[in-house]
Image 1: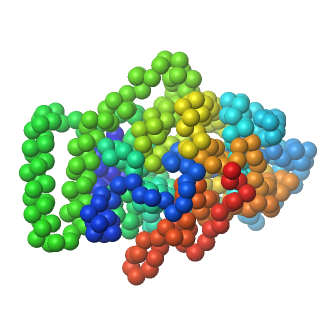
Image 2 (image 1 turned 120 degrees about the horizontal axis):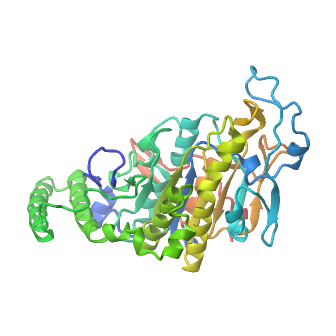
Image 3 (image 1 turned 135 degrees about the horizontal axis):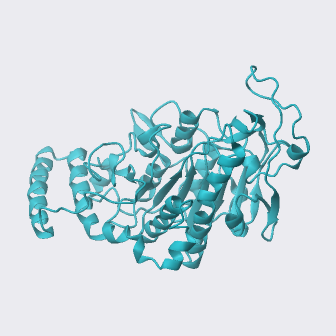
Length: 445
């Protein structure tokens, strides 16, 4: 179901106050905008793995951890003084021309090693899911702030006037919920539109009125709104309603066909894992993400949960990887085949990683001090590993990349200077990275 994330009403219901700057200029708040400098990426697809994937079992090879399996480890919790190191049960091999270390858990993604840029020096502030998840999305875990997608849309506008510029697929209801996809003090038109797990768009067609009669009805409502705007001279709320109503009307002509995955060749759908019980859900998200990106949506977030593996690591982590590996590889291949990967920034990761020591004998605890995320396409170096954790994977020790640095780098790839992308609220200029953040220039092409 497509709906405004921060409301419980229909799709894009009253979704927005337009930016006063745009109103003054007589332009739509969603109109394409010129970036600060030449952009390497035109759009973003964020593969969000909620729960904290274990970096030491996926993309951060730790041979010493394997050698010292069962030896005493260390824990931040003084009540777990007798923790033991847990070597990865899975084999790592080198892949691609530059020999990236990738676990056997991702055999399909490994075939695209030459496109991957592994960020093995990631770290964030807190090892708590809700706070880290919100921080990953908004840059702040203490206050409600605009999301990364909202900042992107605010800075660049949309490329298709008939579609929302920011869409989240199968959004997570926990860990901050709508806050992760909201616009906060930015105009509400920049928040995400959400599509549920079934990929179906409801309430997009009016069964009572023909399109012509809808236009008559809408013209009447818009006329009343225009009279109110004329009387007020400046009223961002009314202008926002006018714009969101028009967008919702235009969406009727494009969205139904866009969401119809059956229009894709059977072989392509099969390559995404659609039809296979294990991969169907995320496969549909990935294929829909490609279609949305191709149609001009600026920021697309996909969601796969259940990466919180405190126990039964061998079974549950393997299941999570198997559900996403083939679809992600198919997405990368599909984008490349359409010559879109070069200007589409694909990102993978969760709110933090996992500990090298065992929990409950066969699981791993939260670890915010060191973990892995990766990027592909969109102007980053392929076949490249940036940063490193210590010999056991406890914490980042080289090429350290804080979540603020990650945000700054994403905006930079989109042609936006994170220090200059600001919005004045309550007498202060706010930005996604607050007063922090450095672009990881080492990963740029």
